[in-house]
Length: 266
Image (cartoon, rainbow, N blue to C red):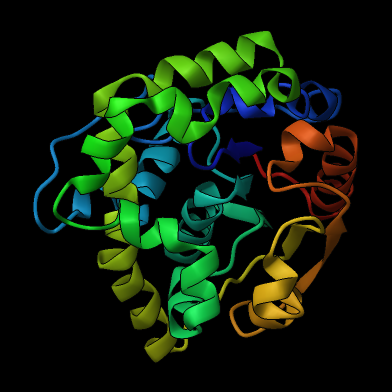
């Protein structure tokens, strides 16, 4: 199975979950395009280089290079949008989909109101096309990301990988491009799928952090996903947003049970 991290983390966010899953499955944990030590393609005003479609193509190519034509995919936060796009664009490759603390970008933006803008203001700050965010963040990335406060939660090695990433101006720019793509080309892709009646074909598991704001914003997150997939189940995890770091045993158990019941491909 393929595990995709969120913002502003790297693949190391899975370091407590991956060993538990590896007892039953082959587990692949990459850095998404632009994040961590992954490649950082040149961006332009279309932001297409950091679209979730482009990131999904990266992931498909990676898995095929490892000899895996069919596989399950798990995505958290921004990684959930990549996982969703992978399942939508390449349904024959994805056997099962797990999304953690995310709904389709078009859904979030359609439901955007003053409460959403207040709670998720970072979407619009990071996604501003004028590169203001990079200038602010690079002045003091430790303060912006609360780096020192996360060491105990993340563990030393994962924390160091995270800290190295957010101190790299190229990573900061790429992460902002991820958000700029979200407000533009990614939304267009989602809306195109909605208009065409395309839905996720594989089984979908939604996990959300009970101590975050999914329920505040959307009520029942499963009801949102039922508009986008035929087979949906899920539940809340007693955790803050970074579930893989805060509640790894619960996350691993839910993912393993779900993926194990639907197969992982070849």
